[in-house]
Image 1: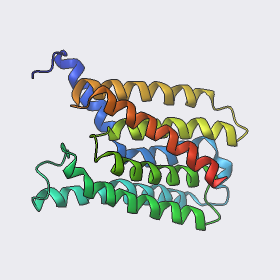
Image 2: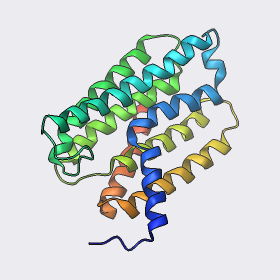
Image 3: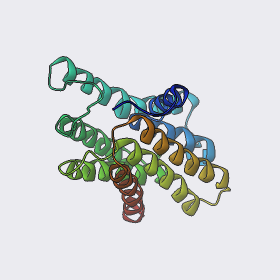
Image 4: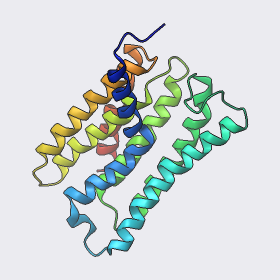
Length: 212
């Protein structure tokens, strides 16, 4: 079925989907933390801080993406876009491993912000929940990731005594924009988008109260 949306709208929706791909969300979150709670990184040199950002990108974006690429080249999936529920099983397991590893590191190193700890634990739980729900529907990974980011930004406001209203409003706006973009260019149903959105929110809440 041909997409009824105008071409400029579809191009914008594709661009938004790529920029806010689920694999990039952890990197965006640590950059946000460096910006809004710099006091949590006092004593860390700029080189080590850049290395920390790079390590988050390496473990949560590059390596999972490379694993998906290898799956495609080995004919384990028909597309790097993982269009079917079956093709998403192995990538779910892969990101679960990497998210758990990042949570383990953040939990065992004293120079890690508490926000990073509950965020990584939350995305680990959400990927686990996504794997289970994947048996019944192709839940939206974009909706899951962007709602997790939104909820994590909101929770930062509760934990830290900072003026965070601008970032909260921006996170809510971005969540709406990303979900709207997926409605335009993905084959997800409204239920798959809603379920993904709810999973992202609830798992961050669960992780927040568990870590604290």
